[in-house]
Length: 262
Image 1 (cartoon, rainbow, N blue to C red):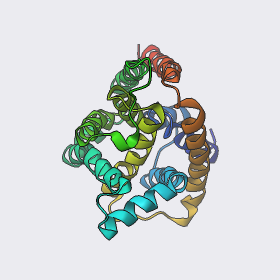
Image 2: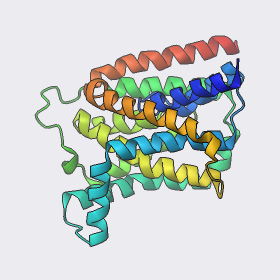
Image 3: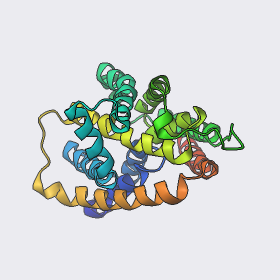
């Protein structure tokens, strides 16, 4: 297939899959192989830069409020508390990603592990879809999330360092199991992606910069990501039952990879 068309398809996939709990990194690995496309470092940087900018735009006011209160030393506000929760939630995956970066990267092209990762994501989503509080009366708002719970969500996020295991799936499901409301769990997961994705890309690219010719890939990823964030946050992930459909999807992906391998 034409390399430009393949790159366009991958940019769309990144923009969509980043904001659904189906593992964008796993999809990029899988579809890169299917399309015969050789990812370059700068191309990956462009795609992730686009989706990172999408969440900055969508939750811009929240992010500005958090940073403003933290920098002003207003540490008793709800915004500052959310900022500290995000910092705590970032620590586990940040440390693990830094220490074991090479180990995770060496498993990048292993389709057996990718298949296992997708299947694991399916199980995680099914668990997250279980409504342990059927009345919904005691579901927590984001302001009620404890520091201990933020750390537990961060520990769950460590699983997503393996390709095929969704970062969103681990964080949203663990947030739901810890009693958060659907939208609160999703919002925390999306905001938590900012330091994690940004840190991962800094670690990956080092001193590399985004070349002008890759700007189109970032724009496609950004546009697809911004639209997907809105649809996902507003219509899909606002009901935990929809996680079952996403679980079915990743199970089918895992099954397809398994059939291919055997």
